[in-house]
Every structure is written in structure tokens, then in C-alpha cells.
Image (tube, rainbow, N blue to C red; front, side, top):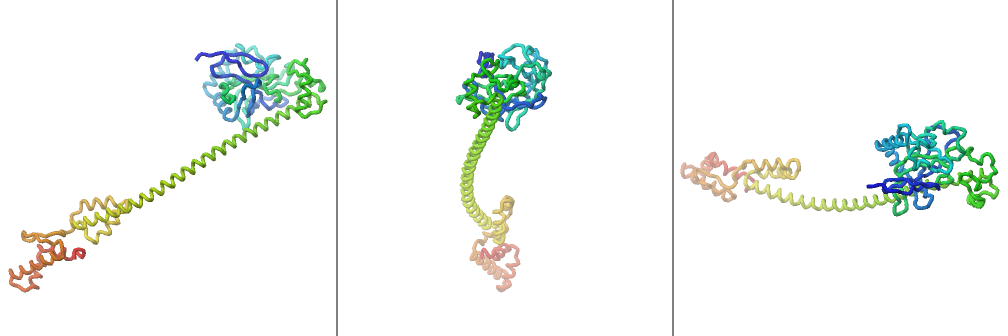
Length: 420
């Protein structure tokens, strides 16, 4: 992909730079001022909120997710390498920090286009980034140049240069990468408090002076000043100090409202998400209830089918003499219990018949003993034969047949109550 020339959206001053296709560079001023003394430490770079681009072409959206992404980019190997190479390329000392520039008169962002940053007034560096509940902050280390008494008069506003994709269909952009910060007199949010103390304001020496068109920076006509007084609810004779105070207060109120609006939008999004999750859970609960009822019905059918199979199986093995009627109840319990069914089936499959309930063979003759009448007939035939062969009475013959081991199966079948 070849780079192409893009127009950068920033403050009232404009510049052109080559950027990768699909990206644009913007500046945004913070909404918090530094203390009177320029002390090293953490300072706000960009508050969370939505900030219209000065030309009204799109809105810059910056929130917690964008800050987190920017911090990840800052701390990544690629981000560190980018800052190192950028500083070396612009003839600054090799470091992982990001320069803070002091914009000279007429140049709101001198860092946007030059090939040699070492020729620009650098008054500090940012060494770390972090996110708070409502802003992105940078750890600023100020140079001696930042505290010189001969510096240009302020107030100076911090303006962060960041990269983002081109505006979406709704006219919004979402910053993703930070490159540098400039203290400028023309931020794209004009009413934001400055980082430098307001004592550096050119009006400080004469509180009654009006910022007319002869001022070097941010000049305003008397008509514009009158309109500003009216918009801020100030009297017609309010001096410059009162105007600055009123604008600062109004801007703080706007920032607060933006924060509340952002919080409300976040809350509304959360409620919408929770409602969707609730509806999904309700649908899933209804589906699970139906599935449970279907499983209960299927389980009842399977239980009935299982009991029928067990009853039929026990009847068959009992008929074959594998179990006795007295054992049937125990085997039914074992076959209908999950952890004993397998063992019971194995036992039935390998068990030898307890007795022959169909016939017995005596001296080469097979006798039918499948019914009570057949067993009684076979016994009477055996007693009659013994009375004839031995020439004895019925009782003696009966005793001799009963004592004959060949008839043991016949007498066992006769003693089975189920076979009576």
C-alpha cells in the first residue's frame, strides 16, 4: 500500500503531512490546567468525551477504551521502537520518551511537519502514560527551558497529536496512537484552561485591557467580546480577567456535562446488554424446562420397557431351571439397579440350570416331568414296577423308589411349589 498525501485536521493553523492511507492526525486540547509552578509529575493530556473538530467535519470520540488502546500501543515493542526511531530521525537524544513542544507565535503545532525536531523549542518530555477514571494522563518531566523568564507570554494549552482512522458514517473518529504534545496558544477547544499559569497572559499587566485585533494571538473584535460576555452571562463592563474566569467555569461545566453524558450512555448500554442477556436466559430456561419434561416422559417409558424385559427374562430363565422361583425377586432387584445389572446378566448367562424341569432319564428311559400330572404318573409307574419286580407292598416299593438316586430329579421337581 502506497502512502498518499492527507490534510491534517487540527487547530486554526493548518499543515500537510504524508500519512498511511486511511489515517489522519488531529490535535485536541485538555481541559485541566497545571499548578502555578511547572512541577514534574502526572498531568492530564486528554479528557474523556466527544470533541468536535474545529472545522465541524467530524467529532473526536475519546473514552476509556481508546485510552487503554493508546496505552497498550505506547507500552508495546512497536510503540517503543517508534518513539526511539522518531527521536533519532529528528535529531533528538535517543530515548523512549515523547517530546513536549512550545509553539512559537503563528505556529499552533510546529511538530506536525518538520524534518528536524531538534530545531523546535522543546520544553519537556512525557515518559509514561496512564488512564484515570475520566482522562488520559502523561508523566511530564520539564526542562529548564520551561521555567525561563524570557519565554513567550501565555496562556499555553496542551494539545495532543494523535492518529485515528478516517471518520465513520456517523462522522466520528476514535484516536488510537499518540505522537507528540505541544503547548499552543490556539487549541482547538479555545476555552480550555492552560497548563501554564495565567499570569503569563498578555492581559495580566492591565486587567482593563481588551483583547482587540491588535493582539498577536487569539485576537477578538469588540463585537465578538460583547457576544462572549453575553454568552457567559457577564455584565457589559466585565474585564478580561472576568471573561477568562467565566470561560474557564463554563468549560468546566461543559466537561462535567460531557462526563455525565458519557456515563449515562455507558449505563444505558449496560442496561440494554443486561436486558438482552436476561431475555436470552429466559429463552434458555424455557427450552431447558421443555427438555426436562421430555426426558421425564422418556424415562418413564424406558422404565416400563425395562421392567417388562426383566420380567420376561426371569420367566424364561426360571422355566429353563437356571433359577428357582425363590431367586426371582432378588434377580429382579439386581437387574433393575444400575451398578449390579451387568453382573446379574453375566451370572445368568454362565449359570448352570438348578434342575431339569422337563424330563429325567432313568435306566435309559426318559420320563416327562414337565407337569404335575406327568410327574405323578411317572412316580406311580415306578412304584408299580418296583412292587412287581421286588414282590413287595406299595409303601416298601415307594420307599425304595424314593431312595433310588436315579429318581432324585423326579422328587426334586415334585417338591418345587411353582411346579405343583
